[in-house]
Image (tube, rainbow over the protein chains, first blue to last red):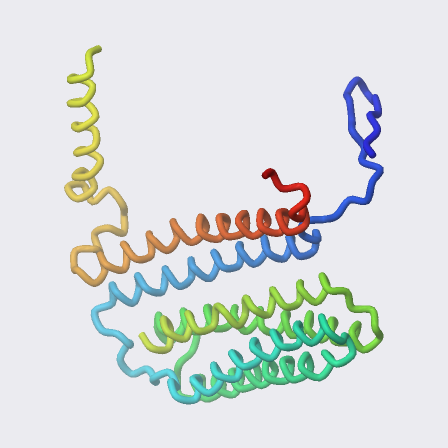
Length: 199
Length: 79
C-alpha cells in the first residue's frame, strides 16, 4: 500500500509495504570501489606497457630476471584460493557452519601467496632489483606492491568474515563484500603476471 | 545551407581530425611513437583505458537490471 504525504510543498510517496533491495548497499559500494581499483590497475599497466615499448633494451641490462616459474606456482595458489572461496559461498548457501573450512582454506592459500611474494621480493632486492635501480624495478615494486597491499587488506576482510561466520553473525551480503574484494585480487593478478613478469 | 556543402564541411572536419595528429605530433609523448612497437602500445592502452570503464559500467547496469527482474518475479512482468 502506498500513502501520499505532503511535506515542504512537495509530494512524497512513502511505501509502507515491505521494500526489497535490488542490491545490498554494501555490495553496490564494493562493486563501485572494485571498478575504480580496476581502472587504477589499468592505468598502471598502461604506463608500464608504454615505458616497456619505448625502451631501447628490455629488460634493462644488469638487472635480474623476474622468477617466472616460482611465480607461476604462486599464481596457481591464488587462483585456487579464488576457486575455494567460490565453493565456500556455495556451501554457505546450503549450510552456513560448514562454510568455515573452505573459507579458512581460501585465506590460507591467499596468505601463502602474500608470504611467497615477500620471499620473492627479498631475493630480487638481494640480486639488485630495487625501486630505483631501473624502470623495471620501479614499475615492478609499484604494481606488484599495490597488488600485495590489496591482497593483505582483502585477507583482513576475509578474516573478519570468517570470525563472524564462526560466531554465526555473518550475513550473505557481508560474505559477498569479502568475496568481491578477494575476486578483484585474484582476477587482477593473472593480468599483472602476463604483462609484468612475462614481458 | 543545402545538404551538399554541409557534407563537404563534415568531410573536411573529419579528415582534419584523422590526419592532423599524425602531422602535428600534438601530444608531448607522441614523439616516442615513431616506431611500431610504441605506437602499438599507445593504441592498445588507449583502447584499454577507453573501453574498460564503459564495459564495467555496462556490466554493472546489466547485472542490476537482471537482479531487479529476478526480484520482480514473473507476476509483475509485462506480458
